Image 1 (cartoon, rainbow, N blue to C red):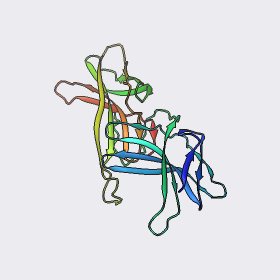
Image 2 (cartoon, rainbow, N blue to C red; image 1 turned 60 degrees about the vertical axis):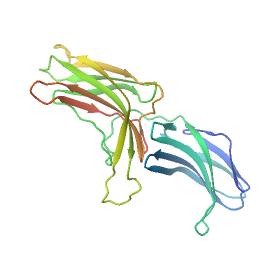
Image 3 (cartoon, rainbow, N blue to C red; image 1 turned 90 degrees about the vertical axis):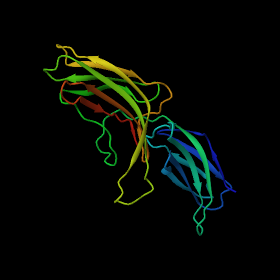
Image 4 (tube, one colour; image 1 turned 45 degrees about the horizontal axis):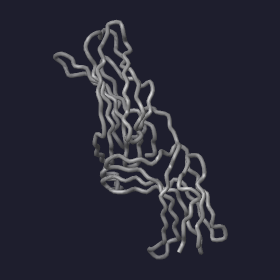
Length: 253
């Protein structure tokens, strides 16, 4: 019986996670595995691996840069495990799994335009747009930004709202190009504030404090947590004007 022994149950981003396979009698693969869970199922993805030989049962796994910490929402969860597997014999293989906690890791908050398999809201209104000044996209963090109003718009109120959406893919088990990715979502938290337009100002600030307990902004393969900022201005006799931005933080999809 092989035993997976880790020097620490905490994996630090950018460092090495060390351990040993006690009782190993044949070569085995050891991997640090990211595990995404959602209502549609579970998706494990190896992010670092090595082969361990019985003559030297110790191992080191690199914890890649940019890996987000483990976190959970209401329906979705992101976790990490160290997994040791023996070679396949017939249709069977032995497997040992030990959960680990990932700490550290950081990515600059930004807007992305390369995740073509999902819809992430980001567009200006006719007479104004949103700009982000500072953000820490996680529970206990904050959002700071401004509404940039075009010349000629000098009165009225812009309602600015932020919401944290938990999103998950519902058909990720289907690997057929005829079936586009389908996503479902639920709002975990939302808040709204009002910005009064002024004739002499084109930049109008807003800010939000993110409650503790919410997950970090993250785009994964089958799950995500998005902090969406929306501004809306009512216009008489015409459709309301709306602008939206969705800043991204961690991207592992």
